[in-house]
Image 1: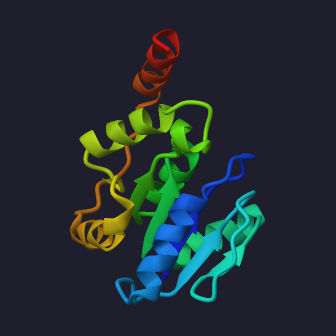
Image 2: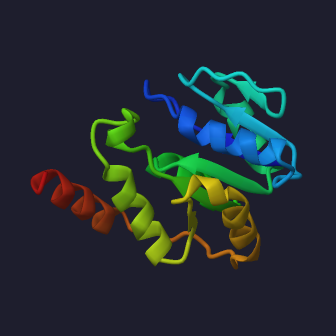
Length: 159
């Protein structure tokens, strides 16, 4: 099962759900798909969509999934890594009105650089990202809080 999580912030991410839905419709994704959509309103016959779930339910979904596809939120990425899951992250972008800036790009870049996750840049090639994630060797997450805080502070200071 693939779990798609969009977090709990009041930001929508329809673009990601459209890409996953289209890939499932075209047969590029064979897995069952469960979505924790948060504030993103989306209807699909190809995916089971849940708005918000309890922490216990979220933990159970993470435990049951093979791959986690998530927005570029630190909490969601780390939740997947701590559960020893293959993680694909896609940044919410300012130009699409998905966030107020592009900080998720920097967050994802750091996790990719450290070899933890796969980045989904080209939404039309989500099937390729899934295959890359399947082949990615799991790397135990080692907290890098100090460096992450510096990365975020530098981003804020420079924007």
